[in-house]
Length: 311
Ligand SMILES: Nc1ncnc2c1ncn2[C@@H]1O[C@H](COP(=O)(O)OP(=O)(O)OP(=O)(O)O)[C@@H](O)[C@H]1O
Image 1 (cartoon, protein in one colour):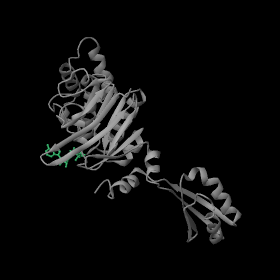
Image 2 (cartoon, helix red, strand yellow):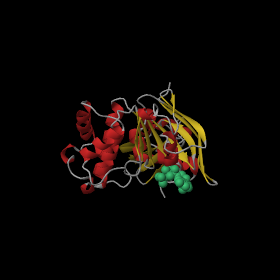
Image 3 (spheres, rainbow, N blue to C red):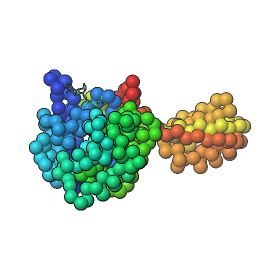
Image 4 (cartoon, rainbow, N blue to C red):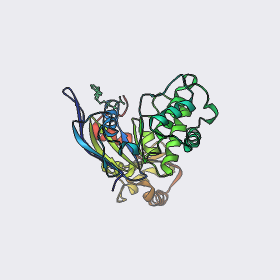
């Protein structure tokens, strides 16, 4: 049974359809990314999943428990980190964590230890007694994540947590998410940064104009659009003959030579590389360097929607 199951999720604002029939599921300990540009419907979808926005249609089930705006049991399994900061700026990090813990009904002897543990996870132990108003944007974001972790969720949902943060905090946020996922927490992560989806997510759903256009592992998505790897070899010798022979190899789509280099398109270059190098050598050319560029999720997005992820 998946940990999160979302079916037929739909929401319109006036006549505008923001989320148009979205289905996906997340397994235990899986990190799933919703990748799409601004306005794709990510925040609207997430808000319905966590039960802070009424849906027009669809179902959300968390660990077998149906979730709607009023359900308590299912919500208790989720840690939600909204895009907008939800913090008290005139309280310290430690005070914010304590305040939100009480709000969630957490207390007792374990609370103090839990707060210290969370400060460690988000890397704010040393600054825990400073007011949030003195924090950088990235530190405040990290505290926002800490609050989402208070109730030891089985599923952590983060809505574009790195937008507008400095590179150092961004890296620290990504590392924390990776660590939590490594410890067995399931994660739903929305982003418009391809690199983040590629780095963090086991599977990615590509969302545009309220619809999931495709979903799968990075490899599956890349395979879906029939993209090939591009191999560039700097070489000397009889390049024309090498190209002629390379084109005879079964999987090579295109090969051409230019100024001391050969370029070719081939699916899954890593498996074919030994044959390619042998062929070039046999044709009397010497390879100096080889570079393999794999298609990325940006290529896939472009293929599926006809536009770039970021404008
Ligand atoms: N409260 C609202 N009233 C009217 N339209 C809305 C409202 N919230 C979102 N929309 C519209 O719904 C669409 C989806 O917005 P949403 O915020 O879910 O996208 P997103 O993928 O999260 O993008 P962003 O990264 O910009 O938040 C957009 O066209 C947006 O303008």
